[in-house]
Amino acid sequence: MKNYPILFILILLSYTTSAQTIEFKELPKEKYIDKCKGAWLGQMIGVTFGDKYEFRSNGIPILEPLDEWTSEALKRSFEQDDLYVEMTFLEAIEKHGINISFEQAGKTFADSKYPLWHANKAGRNNVRNGIMPPLSGHPRFNPHADDIDFQIESDLFGIITPGLFKEMQQLGEVFGSIMNYGDGLYAGYFIAGMYSSAFFIEDDIEKIVHLGLSCLPPESNYRKCIEDVIASYHKHPDDWLETWKFIEHKWQDDIDCEPGNLVNIDAKINGAYVAIGLLYGKGDLKKTLEISTRCGQDADCNPSSAGGILCCMKGFSALEPSWKDYLPNIADKKFIFTNYSWNTLIDASVRVTEQVIKRAGGTIENGIYKIPIQEASPPPTLEQWKNKHEIFLPPIPKEIVSKWNPLWKVKSCKKSNDTGVFPNKFDRDNILIITPPEGGIPALIEYYSETPINAKQLLIETCSINNKPSLLRIRVDYHVVQEQTITDTQWTKISFNIEKWSGTLPTITIEILPTENNDIAIVGFGNIVFQ
Image 1 (cartoon, rainbow, N blue to C red):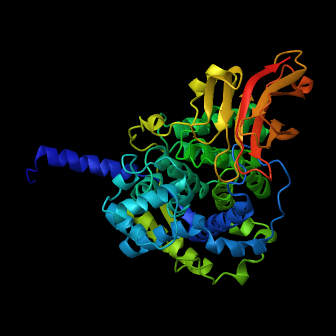
Image 2 (image 1 turned 120 degrees about the vertical axis):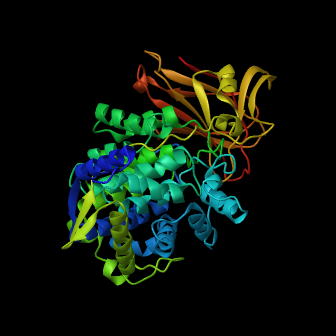
């Protein structure tokens, strides 16, 4: 017997023992393809279900009836960035292989010609200027690092890693770091982790949500937000709006790339809407899409991810014909900015998936994928974006608003020298002045606290600061209950009957919008009191 060094023998024994303990689970290739097709079609369905509502309702849920969806709407999916950007990533993997480097991924993205926004745009510009990932997505160079962008595009990395959470995170980091960091990167792991798990789960959507959550560090704010969704779901299992309100009031802090604007592309808020849709949809596709759309904000991306995850779990063959009737008519049409049609997309996904399985130590035998069992677990924790609150100051910070009235907060307002809290102005000792941001978005203040028992009315003291007519709209729990025009600089008391909500916890919002004959609304508020 040769005298091998003791260390070599120990390493060999350790390797042998480790190899013997690897466990596998089986996934028939036919079943993988069925679920893969479900995943891609679910995205196409979801994005066209919600595209009419994208950023049309922000900070307020959509409560009115939604337009009817038919499968002919799938035609619109071929022009959606929710799909063609992730297909850019798929093409990059096909070109460079599954061991693609950060730089190769970044340069492929930099060569894209389509329009981009927020984190994607900043990340691509960084790479074009020589700042390669992962720095291109770091908040030092990208002020959109926590935005939704990678969350939108991460579906691919779950689709090509069935049950392979470590492989998902490895590939996700390479591409997600181009444009995002921290919670923005974890957002993609959450979405992709749900897809990865859906290949081995048939009818337990809550389990899928939990497995996606297990792919995030416990200290991540994104994870804490989704944990709050789950906790509220168990408390209010049949009322998605209660969970929406809870998340809105706890996590909607306006610390994003558009402070003062109700539009919020923060990843965790929109990720919460995906989770709300999945949990309250309870496995019903139409209900899942409706709820994730009604949550508002990025109302096409969120149902796209929710629909993709649910249809991955169900599989293409299980979907009712009404969801896919029109697909054969467009199956050979290419998604813009890509070389993929529906038919070639599935084939490409299968090719890459089989490479990933083999790299992970799995095998493909007689049409069966033998996949190493990988536990859903968090990646190494990235440092938090500590000075984010210093960069994205809201137009009127809450500590300033509290000097006017601590029970109300400003959710939407343009930053201006004319807005804020002012003492001794317009014959009042303490007033709040707000004006709407650009783009037809209302200025908005909100009350979310228990109303006094036996309160009969809410008195609002207000006036027009610029002597132009403005529309004042009052909502209770997001339903419009009263509208009134504010016409001049004379202080007016508006009375609203609150008896119906006395002693309860309603959300009361007051919106300010310019009227048709006015280009800008500037409105002041004095006392707002319950009586």
